Structures are given as C-alpha cells and as structure tokens.
Length: 176
Image (cartoon, rainbow, N blue to C red; front, side, top):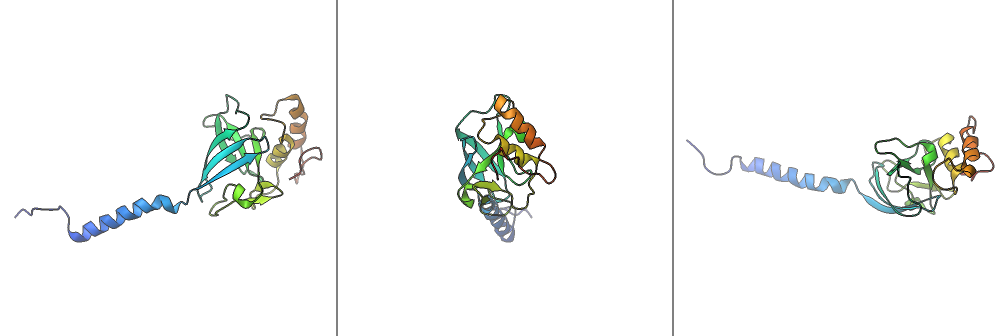
C-alpha cells in the first residue's frame, strides 16, 4: 500500500521545526557587538566583535594603510592589544601594529567570552598577557606614524627590540 501525504510523521516534523528555530537563533548567541576603536596614530576603526574574541575591522579615518599591507588584524601577542596592517593572508608583525587607546573597557575589543575588553592606563590590554617585545615596539612607535622605517622610528624600534628580560619599555617611549 502506498501512503499519500508527507514523507515523514508529525514527530519528525516537530523535530525538524525545532532544529530550524534553533539554527535561526544560533547567530544571535554569538552576541555580536559593534564598537569604535582608536589607535595611537589617530586612526579610527569600526569593529564588529563576537565573544569568541573575533572582530571584523574597517578603517573609517586616519592615515591610509601601506599598499602592501591592506588587511587589518587584531593582535594581543603580549599584554597590549593592537591593530595591525598585514599583507593578504599574512601574520601581524609588531612594527606594523599600533596600540588601541581607550577611556573605558567598552572602548576595547572583548576578550574571549567577555562582553568588553580591558582598559588600563588608557590602553587596551590582555589581562592574562605578559609585557613583551611587541608591547615595547607598539609603545616606542606610538605617535610616529605607520611603519617602522622612517628616520625617527629606526632608533626607537631598535631600542624596543632590546627591551630585556623581563621586557621594560625604554624611557624615551610612551609608557604603558
């Protein structure tokens, strides 16, 4: 005997309906937040961040990125959180990153599982990070423009790379 109608029973229909509703709600569970980020070079960025610590960045003002490094990425390699210019598919290099400035925790990208980031001394930090060479580089290059090869940047960059163990940001540089 051939049955006419739906190829599944009402229990299956309820299960499929529940699955569809759950699937539709999953993106909302990621809790995307939008915020404006500012770096030490006066650049402003729009960021869409989720609680997994992933942010999509878009520069909205300030000096343009170098042509060979058009991609933006967040870096929290040590203690400071910075925005870096990278080549397509490249990884951030400390000399191409600038620290994110803040007034409150809401001005910082969220840490994994958190609503907001952490703002200390007007800089966004990773509370579990240890101060290291990437921090010294971002502090020494703060306010000098993008890159690390301009005459006023070369000496500061070299000092930052030699910050010691444990790393101490050199005196001529902005202090974290």
